[in-house]
Length: 95
Image (tube, rainbow, N blue to C red; front, side):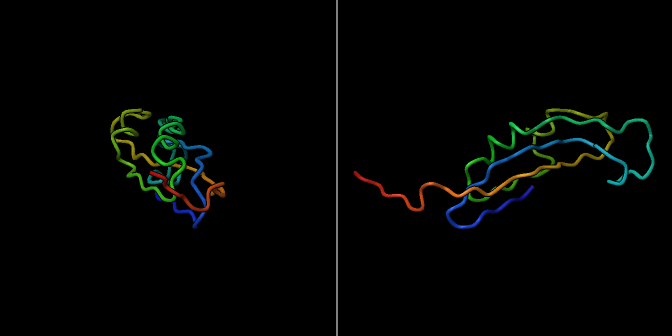
């Protein structure tokens, strides 16, 4: 997963699913094991929410620990996000 927003915008994760949700991603026929998935929205929000950019490897331990599918099934991440305008265009530090 890789997402980048423009200047003055921050990432807002809308939803994220990890697993093997459909035929067509590495598997072309239903072998009876499809539909295994985990909602990982909170994981992506923790890792990426409020940042200008974010990159998360699909094999990341936080995602893998959800163990949505039986071993041997190729897993992938489906995520949607929005770039929202930050109410702070610049930051000023006062000491």
